[in-house]
Every structure is written in C-alpha cells, then in structure tokens.
Length: 387
Image (tube, rainbow, N blue to C red; front, side):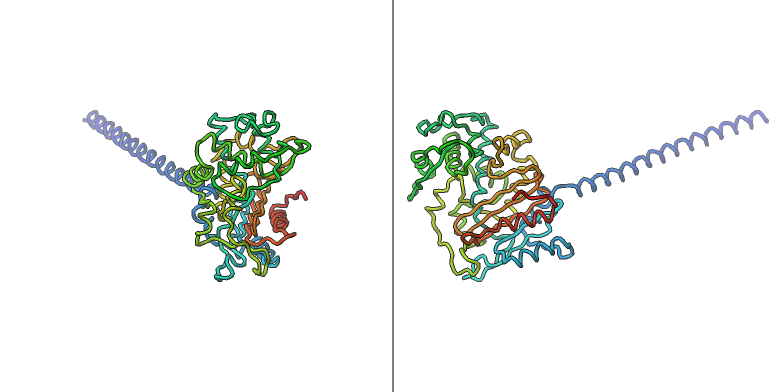
C-alpha cells in the first residue's frame, strides 16, 4: 500500500515538474518575442530619425517657407538678410536641417507679388554643374571618357586634338570666344556657331570661358541624338523630379521672378528669348532654392554619380579650384552666376549638411550678394572662407 502511494506521489511530482518546465519555456519564448519586438521597433525609430533631409523631408521642407524663430542662429541670419536689403529667396541648412527658407522683397513689383520658397529664379552659370553631370552620365555609359579629345566631335577647332573633356570641365582648354550669336534657330546651330568662332588664348592655363560648356552641350547632343533641352529634361526632371524650367517654361510660370537692375525696382530686364537661348548648356535654366539644394544633395549623397565619378567630376586641375560649375576649397564648395538681373550663389559643405543658397532677382552693376552668402556660411559653420 505504501509502495503504491509512493509510486503515485512520484508520478504526480514528475507531472508537476513537466508542467512547470513547459510553462517556463512558453514564458521564455514570449519574453524573447517581446524583447525582440521592442528592439526592432526601437531600431526602426532610430533609423528613421537619422534619414538625411534630402530623402526624409524633400517634399515638405524644400518647397515651403520656413523660419525657426526659436533658433538663435536662424533669427540672426534672417536679421542680417533683412538689414542688407537682400531681394530674393534664401535657403539655409544647418546640421542637416532647414532652419530658414523664405523670400525677401518682390518677385514682381508691378504685380505686387512677393518672393517666397516657391519663387523660380534663373540660376545662370550654376547650370554648368548640371551640364557636367550629364557629361559624367555619358562617361558612365562608356560613350566617352574624360580623356576623349575634342577633335572627335569638333575637328576644325584649333588644337582640338590636344584638348580633352576633362580640360573643358576644368576651364583649362585654352579656348575662348569673342563673337556672340545674335540669332537663334536651334541648340545645335547655336553650338556650331560657337565652334566656328572659337579661338585660342595665349596659354591653356585656367580661364573662365563659357564656350567650354556650350561645346560640351554640343558633344552631348551628338552622342545622344537629342537636343540639350530634351536630355536635360529627361534626366533631371523626369527621373529626379527637380522641376527645372527652361526659358520658355520660365516666362509662363506663375512663380517666375522678374530680374531687376536696382533695389528700388525702377529698372528691370525685359524678356529676351534669343539672349537666353544662346546660353545652351551654360545659363538658361531656372528653379527654386529648394530644388537647387536637392540637386546638390543628390550629388553629395551619390544618388546621381557614385563616389569615384563625383570625385572625378569635382577634381580641379593642379593648383586650381574650379571644376564642373563649382569652386572647391577642401571642406566646402561655392558656385556663383549672374545673368540679366539674376544672381545665384551656393556655399555648402562637401556633404551638403550645411549650406547657404541665395537666389536673387536683383543684381546691380558693381554689386553682388555672394559676399553675404559667404559671410552667413562662415558664421554658421566657423569654416574660414577663402577670400
């Protein structure tokens, strides 16, 4: 009897132990699931918070007026812009965050229309960087290399057999053009006029000559069998949604700005389609400050070109600073352009996380907004600007 009872107790004990083991395993599995679930959620939150502005806020922060009034730096820079009498739109990015983007002055004084984040400006010579990017796309495709001679496409240009694509990108080709076209029939005809009227400088040391980029535009048209405008629109607008306007689109854009010659708006430039049309590849496109910043970030984030391609495009000639639409100073880059009452300036760190962009529709003779942009950037980053 006792033996039987002992057997029953032993069986009951083992049964209880088994149930406890099963329960502990279930609880352990649940704990692992809970911990893993919380960790995954936390990981997703952290990852999201670190997304760069060019990807996380490009649709929100880059097309609206922004002024962080509780940010001392934003308040200070805004005050300086106002006190300077600046006319245009300013975009300032600090530590990967837009702290200021708003308009100053009139987009169209006659229509009583003020500048704002959606105002569209001619970007002038900053467009040369876009042309260089299109060239690098053809390098990637294997159609040309940076060592391809100009003579392959324009054999009648003096010394063309000794001038490379790289030298044209860095303005060290030794080419110049002193005669400008007065009429316009097509982009190809415009570039051919330039090719027929190009001459050589005394040396091939660095010299800022826009004809280099018009000839590059001509090379692009020969390679792709498209007009420059078609190629530009396909890549930058259809594929990358930068909303860049050619001149025909610009003059009908409800957000267009008028280019003024004076701060009192008493002198302005009337529309001149021929003057802009002859700037093929060099300065006849328009855009907002936000989209210009987005273009720069697409480059610096290696969305348009990989690291090697971007380094090659941004590499100046030995001892020089200019390459592909920008001046390169180690920690930062600058770009600048002027055309018929418009002035464009960008100063940005290599990674684009600190930047000042001033697009102005007022450019008085002998004056410029570029020093103001550099001063604001220097205050914001403590990077010493080369004067």
